[in-house]
Image (tube, rainbow, N blue to C red; front, side):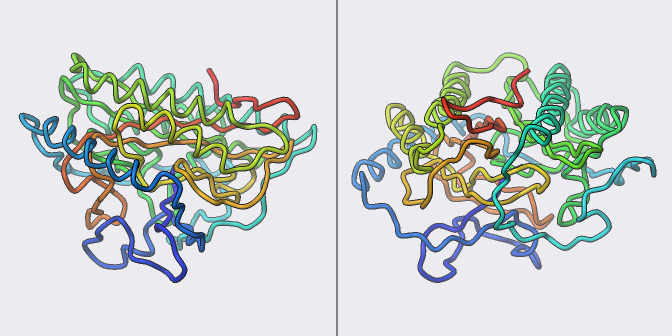
Length: 344
């Protein structure tokens, strides 16, 4: 599950997402950052954005806009399953300032949580076919998680009503599973986070192709995965956090896509914590330390990064209707690099 960070600074700025409805500000995964806007490569990124918007407008032709379906009631979780601290309240927790550091024992727990999350995501991906609804995917994910004695982390987080996020086509993230059936040519990001009974979260996502998908869309998905892996390849003890965004941005610029304003985050016993992981050029302070865990989860758009949020308070879609793809892994920083904990 992603965080939305408002673009720089120095005061609380307006969000790149337009919000409709009430109390939307409280319904977003958010972290307010007070960083300086990166000037490096600004002219180049402006040109890239214009190219991306052209790609996006061409791609939208002939595809129906995403419409919301009916959202079924929240699924129950057996009483014996351990709940995360935010269960039972619709309050959206603040991003915890404590970075998730691990010793030998807690790394074992993190690996177990992430391994389960990876298996659940892999299973969910097998369900991506025309005519299958995102609600069906949610039910299957929910059942697999509770059968393993774990809790689906998104359920009840800030009032989120489902156990998984399913973001289709122009939905950037936080899509709520509903009665809409997947169609031939769709793409869908499935974002799985589980809270294992030992008290650790594992977080991962992937964009899947539904049926016959056109070549430009396949390329978007392919490049997004490559960006995630390039960001991970930058990770190592002592390396600056900004190296992640630099590595990703360099690759994105070759293709003319836009990087959406959603970020990675620390994860462990806490669902969302520091450090904030930017996927663009940035000045994020600090350096990686062996034993830290966080997510890297770039979201790329064929068009503009401007988005709006439906009145459900969660579903973020591109204003211009352009497609988005996203991939995510939880990683553990090591002395020599990074271990992908959610690899299946």
